Structures are given as C-alpha cells and as structure tokens.
Image (cartoon, rainbow, N blue to C red):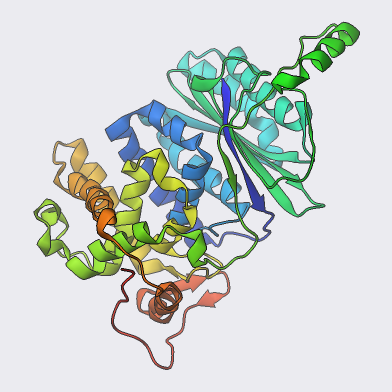
Amino acid sequence: MKRSGSADLPLHYGYVPKWLAERMASLGLAITETILADYGKEEVLRRLADPFWFQSLGAVMGMDWHSSGITTSVMGALKRAINPHGASLGIYICGGKGKFSTETPAELARLAESTGLDGHELVHASKLSAKVDNTAVQDGFQLYTHNFIVSDTGQWTVVQQGMNPGSKTARRYHWHSANVQSFVEEPHTGVCGISQGDILNLTANEAGTTRQGILQITGEDPMQMVRDFQRLIMPNHHEVHAKDVDLKRLGSVLWVAHDRGINNFEELLALQGVGPRTLQSLTLVSEVIHGTPSRFRDPARFSFAHGGKDGHPFPVPVNVYDETISILQTAVQKAKIGNSDKAEAIQKLHEIAARAEKDFVPNDNFDALVQQERDESWKYSGNTVFGEAKPPQKPKSDQLSLF
C-alpha cells in the first residue's frame, strides 16, 4: 500500500446543518453509484485516495471549499448513504471522527464475517496506517478522524486527519492499498498540509540508518519512509478569489450552462427543460464523476456548483441542489434498466465544457460574477448556517460571462 496524498487545511470549527447534511448524503450516493456503474469499485477507492479530487467532491457538495471540515463531513455523509447499500454496491465505510475512529477494528471484523474478507489483514492495515501518520511521521498533527473504505474485493483506501491546535491547521492523509508496497517505506499517496518546518519522519528513505539503530535497540521491524505523492495546501481565507480558480475551466462551464443553451447541443437533448443554473451545477458534478485527475487542481472551482454553507462563494442554492440530485438519481435509475440517455447527456456536459477551454480568454468579471450569484441566491432558496438569503435592493438579471 502507499500513501496517495495529503492536504493541509485551515482548522475550521462549526457544524453542518441538517438541511445540508441530508442533501450531501443523497448527492454523494448518486455520484458514487454513477462512478461505480461507469468505472467500477476500484475507481471509487482510487478517487477517494486523491486529495485533490476529495476536496473537489466536498466543494461540489456545498461544504466550505478550503476547510478541515470537508473531511469529516464528506466521509460522514458517504458512510450514512453508502453503508445501507453496501451489499449491492460492494463498498463499505468504517470508522469516523473521535470515538467512531476507535470502532474501526470492530466494524472491520463484522464486515469480514459477512463478506469473507480477511478481517485480520484489514484491521492490521487500518492500525498501521494510523500508527505511521500519528507516530512514525511526527509532524505535530495528532489524528482525530480515521475512515477505512473497503471494497468486497479486499481493496481499500484510508482517509484520516490530524489536528495541530497550535497552528490552527489540520492535515489529511490518504492511503491506497493498490499503491502500497510497504507500510513503512514511502506508503502515502498524498498528504495535504502547510510546511511548518522540519519534522521527524521515520518512514523516509533517508532514515534508514536511524531505523536500523531503532531495530538494534528494540528488536522491532525497521521503519521506512513515507513520501508525499500529492500535496494539497489550502489557504486560510474563506472567500473564493480569482487566483483560487482556473478561470478558463470555470468560464467554459458558464458558457455551456448560460450562453449556449442545451438546445444547441444534440448530445444534450435528454436534458432539455433543465434551467441554466442547474446546468451549471450539473456540469461541475459531471466533471467530478468523469474528469481526469489533472482537472482537480483548483478545488475552489467546484464551489460554483452549490456554493458553501458559510456563504462563500455564495449561499447554497437549495432548489438547484435538489434538482441536481433528482436529475442524477433519475439518470442512475434509468441506466440500471438499460436507458442510459440521461446519464450519457450528463457526461457530455463535462466533455463539451472541456472542449471549449482551448478557445477561452477569461476576463476580469470574477468578483462581479460572485456578487451576482449572491444577489440571485434568494431566487433558488439560498441558505447558509447564518440563515436564508434575502433579495438585494437592486437584483441583477443577466448572467455575466467569464470569457
């Protein structure tokens, strides 16, 4: 196995309101089912092991795009939504935050009894991945959440997060069984975090001599190093700035959704009748489902699907969120009975936007675009943890362009 990546995130306290938590679970299940149908179980695990994709998923689900809360909230929503269907989906999520993380071994043991998987091996992987990130890599972050996602084929991913109260930051670690050759020699697929000086990392290749010394003293197996394959570092500011977003990619999404209209694309006939604002969200959801790894380097862009619970970049458009879930759920159910027209149309949204990027020249309308989304949020029952969005004194009507 190998650590697939990591993320450094501002420590963000707060809560997820019930109205958003329920929608996150519904959208998360629909996205997972679509990926399973189109790409398989191992692809779900691979994506969860990618810190950039994981952050983008959290943003498209309406969480605060940059904060530590994405980790626990997204994994909690996925666990609630996926586990009741685990037998049919072939995916199970164990563990969680705080005391729930300590229940992981017992959950894995029960899972092994019902599936025939090697429970001892799974528990061993869970404990070792936590031990490495909490002890072997002494970077000042103490683990407080641990999720172990496993398929019925025995492949797995770990998503766990540590806290550093002194620096008010959190660091998320990702592990993936397909990449791991050794638990103690460069096992990570990625780590997300801000550099805070030298750390003691007994999994590093360069720590061989030290590990040998430890071996001689303790008689235990030597610790070999953890290399960070992917590293995501999120800023402290809550607002989404133009520099946080690939403007060509965001501009192409708005072009497909607002400027061209689906009637101009034969590939999107199955989506006729869907409004421009929902098309904007569906296009970003389509990219989360069908996009290649290189397209998730700016997770903030995906907050333009459903905003954020703290109001950044704008309040969560609840009506749009519900319509997005409904369309995606309908596409999943129709595809199960052989009618994949709507699912294929949703995939085409991403493909059309991606093709359009090469011709885009973004302008400087970004701040005005964000303000317009805020001004119009009330039309879509916009909501945040602070309350419902209100109409502005002078609402704007024309969607701005980013090209």
